[in-house]
Length: 249
Image 1: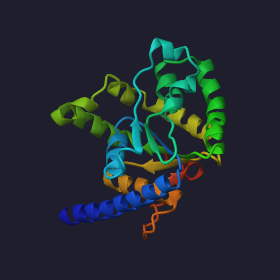
Image 2: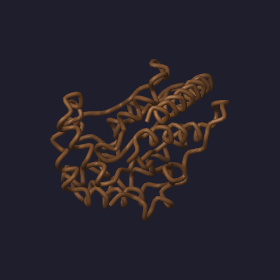
Image 3: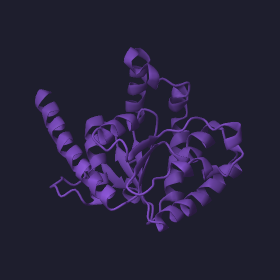
Image 4: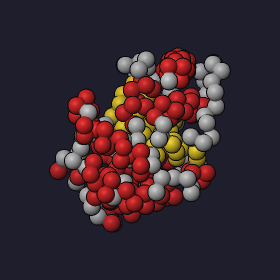
């Protein structure tokens, strides 16, 4: 166990150094990077973000996790409240859940109408095309977790006092509606995966392996760290087409 942990820590440090070098390059060249991090509850979004951003520039890095929309925001154009958080030159913005709430939790929980859901699936690629046409580098990641592993992590949340702030009133719904979330995920991937804004799936049943491969993938996309970095594991990091038939059910 100790050797495995030491190997993980050593590779994580190497990858974090590569992230620092890569971000220095994006800042120098005024690039704008958006990372959309989506996935089921307990899939490891917070842990992955913590390791990714640990040594990134605090001034040029923002993590956005928006709360439930206000009454005023619900009357706006759906994407409107996300736009002010988009990056300026040299900035990296990580959305810990994003506009894709409308492709997951909202339709599953009945927080939007079927018409709003269908409209979103039509509009999301258009919105993302506008972003990428304007030069934003958009990286969309879906963190996938099995039913068994999710149940295990939800149970741990309920008994671990240090995970108090991870508890949510929707935790029970995540388990009860696992199949509905699977259907919503599949439709989202089918209708919003585009060459200019592709989805990448990260298998997260092993948290540490998932974190390392998530960072490897981001470095591969940005492709400017000047380091010899191992390629993402093809059994952990999959494009949308290759993931079909392997996603959690």
